[in-house]
Image (cartoon, rainbow, N blue to C red; front, side, top):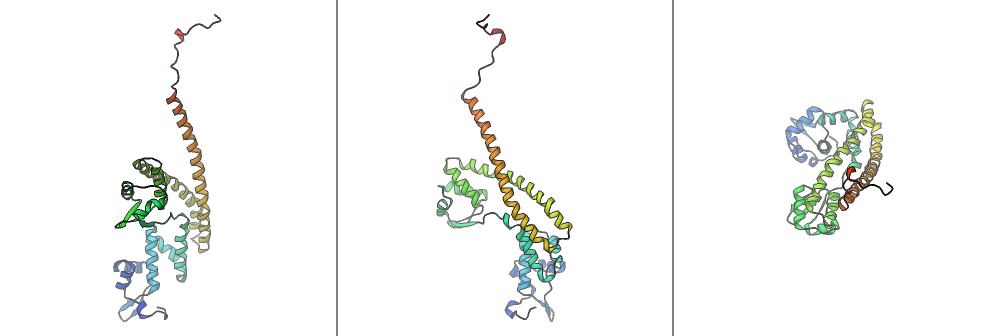
Length: 264
């Protein structure tokens, strides 16, 4: 332990686990995997401090992002022990450009003003049921996907049925997930695979992050350009169908019953 720590900064394994929101068994598993450095032995008790707590919080955060313990171990072992936290934060931060807009907490009566469109209690309940909004207390809401909620509120304010708007939102999330997977696979094949083949060098992490940051506007513009084109094609098809609805084509004429032309 560092001599700069005080007795209040040091704690046995059960208190370390409690502060990290884990079980003692989880902490021991991280120790056995080499993900957590051992504590300082004093007699028969191992003592831990802020460095250990920070490592556990980092591991838990990476797990929430989808990193397996084995993958976290690889990242740690690729770097000197003194820079493990820095390296892990770089890998975690590599995906930062793709973070969605953060949740917004507000009072229920503030929702309409925040969204910039009229809302109703029924629509709020539908948002809660959909998982886009959750209640955090009496009269309090947490908007989990602000962009979707704002655009949905504007669509409802235009006169579209809330149920239809919700159905379209669900469909959009499903379809755009398929598109996102196309770009992720492109990144994996063209960028990430080379980094892994090179042995996950720390010097390459910054290049990875640069690539991710550059890919976001490219993917966004590509998606927007493709949507504009396909939307125009869909509207053209709609207009053609509308034309047929308004003025159905004349029924075909039986050749045998056709009147002779005037020049015969």
